Structures are given as C-alpha cells and as structure tokens.
Length: 177
Image (cartoon, rainbow, N blue to C red; front, side, top):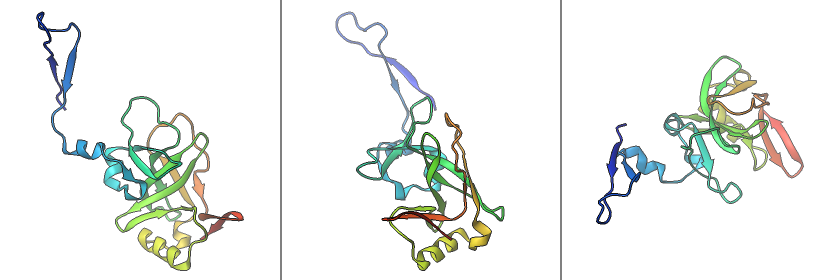
C-alpha cells in the first residue's frame, strides 16, 4: 500500500516543523476494521486477513476486533489455529490465547463454527451429530485432535491435544465424544 506524506501548512510561517500526516488510500477492508463483530461471526476470511482478534470487554460480551498493533500477541486474544484430526484431516479456526494454554478452540467450516469447548452444559446428541456433520468425519476419525497456533506467541501454549469435546456444567468440566 502506498502512503503519501503531506506537510500541513499553518499560520504565517506556512508550516509546523516535523508535522506530517499520512494519507492512506481507500481500502474496502478498512471499513470492516472499524466495526466490532461478535466472536460467533468470525469467518475463515476474517482470520486470513487478521490472525489475531482482541475482545472489547470479555467480561461483558463476545465482541472482537482485529488486533493490528505491532508487538507481541496480547494475552486473552483469539488467535488463528490449525487443527489436525486423528485421521490426518486438517481444519482452520481459532482459540483463546492465555498465559499457559490455548482454550475454547473453535473450528470454522463452510457450514458454521464447531466449538470444542461448550460452556453452557452438556451438548445434546443432535448438537454432537451436527458438529461431526460440519466436520465431515466420525468421532473416531476426529479425536484426538491436535491444535497448533498459526501465529507466533510469547509462550508455548500447553494442552494442544484434545481427546473429546469438553463441556461445563454446575458440577464442573466433563468430556463427551
């Protein structure tokens, strides 16, 4: 992208030394960059354009925007990840990057998102059937699945192999395939 530098003239002397503005040519994607979106709306195209997404306020809602600042990937950001199933099939998606692990991984498919972590209780058999249908595999073809970040992070996250879907209910965390 070409950036034009322009010196701004002000007052009788004509310019302020050292003051310059960058004019960035129009980019249709830039309109989307200013708009927050729900985590559930993230697509493969969004992750391809921006592999790191940050929350507006994770305690309040699931709204995210692309992380475009230079420097290390912030903690508690959604990062692009690759998934390799037991049968060798590969998928793309994202996971929440924490200090020690990748949590709440989600696979993105053309038919919709497939979360591996289900925070709102045990999934129904129909929920599981739909997830495997979206993935195009059976449970024994999919699990165990290996999760690998596709962006460089400050730490090597642990817990990169999931043996099943995981859900949370009032009694704690549970596995279900």
